[in-house]
Amino acid sequence: MAVKQLFIETGVFEFEGERLPYRLSYSRRRTLAIHVFADGRIELRVPLGCTRAQAEAFLRARGAWVRRTQRELSQRPPPPLPEYAEGSLQPYLGRHYALRLERRRPERVDLRGDLLWVRSEAERVEPLLRRWYRRCAGVVFQARLRACYEQAALPDVPFPELGIRVMRSRWGSCSSRGRVNLNLELIKYPIELIDYVIVHELCHFLEFNHSPRFYAHMERLMPDWPQRRRRLNELSKEIAPFPARS
Image (tube, rainbow, N blue to C red; front, top):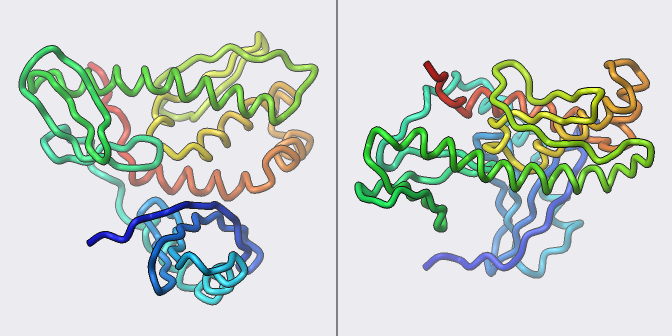
């Protein structure tokens, strides 16, 4: 019988001068356990009565193992091109969902629990999924842009217009006319990494360069941005991009 997960918190612990984000999962269990996922995420699973101090002490004592495991996972070879066969894993917001295919109409895509259902003819799976990703990106990116903009509190910067594009060499861009463009690929990545790209572009409205003043703004608005950037680069080696269109 599965152990029911009751609630989750997030935090950051320091190990050898590095700030490492983690997820703290409380449940009806008796022991403490650390899980490091392929994308570098750290999850600490603890009993209900465990305090945060106890949990972080357990995590810090195993910090060397955590960092070694993250490095080993980051050195895995690049992923193959995406597959759209039954059971293949499709990334969305930092998780992977098993693809389930229904050979019937009307065409649609649904996310149900841990499964991503696509109802279509076989040759239509990839374009349907791409359209679904774009619809989701329109909602998620707009919400995160609003949240990051309000948290940044930039009174002299009007709320920017959002653009969504497939970019092969950049995660985002901005223009002096008040537009932020985000790479559609980001919809596959965790929310905190989407926020990192958004904050990066918002800081360019203050400094249209990568000068020390630009990074001072980044440090003020998102102190852990170097860790987020590193994690984004590591994950990009594992998550396959959308196929190039002919």
